[in-house]
Image (cartoon, rainbow over all chains, first blue to last red):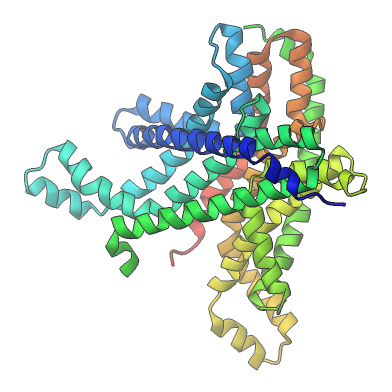
Length: 220
Length: 215
């Protein structure tokens, strides 16, 4: 009854999809992290309009579905003359979405740094930029490394939603293979296992990287 | 901007919002039941079942919800089972959330000091009574904030049902857009509806998190 050769025979298409998934997820995560850093600094700013904008951004994004955000950018913005292709729209949507979560994660990380660290850095004559770049941020990153890795996994899994706007990612190409072969269970089982293997590998590698980057963190 | 179209379609939008709430309630109820069951199997280290539970959690937390939804919606008919769009959405959301909720509850159970269970046993309580009246109530104080946080995610995730054509809030809004060609206004209204549902829960999580003593 089953033909497990179906996904294997279409491996090239599925692997092309996997590459798109990895590219889209990685790019989105890099942009999201930059956005999260800016957002976290804005939320801690002494200038209230900046704080307000950052708070509205975080709350609106975190309390609405990512699928809706994807649709707004891909189907909504063209009505006011802003047009993106599906991949670009997808990367923007995932970046903006994940950026809101990373804003809160990074903010918590910055908050976890004790006041004494900053006072010591001031006493040593470091400039504000040096204090942030060399004292606060590296320690904050160490403290928030696990949730940041988790956020990357979320982006990786969330990128599957881009198949809804016809991005040829792993999920999108799985649908193509499914409609070509009609081997639904075989194809989707295979692809589900590929995703599970991918997230296990990614979190394994990133945790290893964390141990190399922050050796003291594992000692605790 | 033409907000008139949104006002004219208000009954359709609110109908969609109700469907989204129904789907959310079903997914939360069934997902929590499944998650609790799996968490108990794992903490009690039931042989064989415990290993199956682990594999289940790894697969459903490690793959996208959309893939799981396709699996149920396209895969079950392929195996000869008839599933409606609603049933497919509820099944997929239940299986998906069960895996996450199991881990949240398990972490909560493990946060309860061992002495509590031992004290319950020495008072003559059965393992069931100790779990039901001593451990689980204390689990809730730790597990409730992440649990409600996950429920917020689940309410938002019911939007995926639109991809298999289930007529929830987003699908209804798309039919309005097809008719009126005003995507931004309609999507803004939809975003507002989701916000009104989710934001109070987000505030609740923040308040509960403050109340949990730091460990």
